[in-house]
Image (cartoon, rainbow, N blue to C red):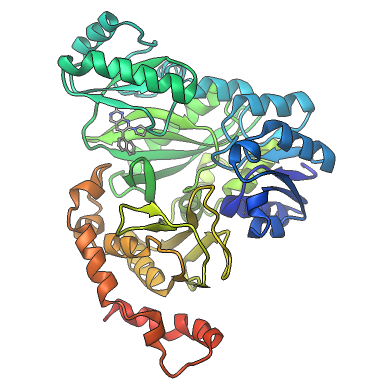
Length: 488
Ligand code: MV4
């Protein structure tokens, strides 16, 4: 087993990983930027080292600084979490060179999957259904026109070095093709340093469904079912759930087996996700996310598998103890990402000091956060405050439990998107499970619904007039006042 793990990340995911370390008896080491001196993850770790100034390029993205800290503290492994260096093949290679275990796939696999055109080709070879499109990079207009005529419009041009939606251009007809090709190549070059782009048939309003995978270093791979992540805005997921209300048990078993087999064929080690578009009953491969994802807890809630612990076991060289037959999906789980952002002002980030904080609890509730009352959310990073995850015996119970939990949740100080989540949780289309990637744009009443919810809420100060001392208020708030609003 690994002996000491440096966590090359911050916030809730750093704590999530350190919690797994603690349960496994493995000491954890935090590295933090000057902006994160007061952050919870830096306190939670067994050891913590400041590795640089606030900007991520000088700290969390600084490979030399992270490697130096790992060597200095004698860590034999690094967990990259998500974002930052998580899918960086150069970082994984640096770890391999130094004899420090990178907890995740090898630099070879990260290179392969990071090249989205190469990944497409590999997945076709492995028998995974992909979106109709090109299997090599497109450089010239004439080449693009030929391909476009074969697959038909609308189509989408994507940077091969990208992923997650950045720089993608939808093309409605041939008249727009030349400009779209040029602009996507330009964005690809500036954002990813490679001008390579590829073309796919554009699917209008599909669902976004992904399979959770675990592969070990002994050639075993399994899947833990799917997550539906269709509720997103500008390529930022906001709500995720498992299982998808659109996927039958049969489809889950079939696609999961295909995805796990492909992971095994590429030699995938650790936790990973295979992303698909799901349209008219069919799955189309998009890309592999070669890391543990933000939304992994919904899968943990319905399978009972600790995905982070499994990743650490795999990185220690141990074979998977779970077989596909051991994996059973029980009930339904939903995650709401609670962000410091203003839902009334185009969701602009609102970092700042959390004045009072009370997280929901009780049956079936999980809150993964890196904050506390009086903590100041720094402006330099992602403004996520926490992830609120609920489990229910079925989707309906999960939704009503999420409603209850959102009304218990007290965060004062920065504006946050809890009212938005409250509006979605009572949206009729959401409740029916009729989701798609354009859900938020299409549900044009969401903003007004949210405003109505905010207006009917009684201000916190007015809820407990008889309690004068501020601390007493904070304690009493969740117990009585918050939930009542749900029915007001
Ligand atoms: C697509 C697509 C439609 N057709 N590809 C955006 C994120 C990245 N992983 C892939 N994305 C998309 N690729 C084809 N051929 C639509 C999207 C897309 C999307 C996908 C998943 C979740 C949200 C999305 C929002 C807009 C567009």
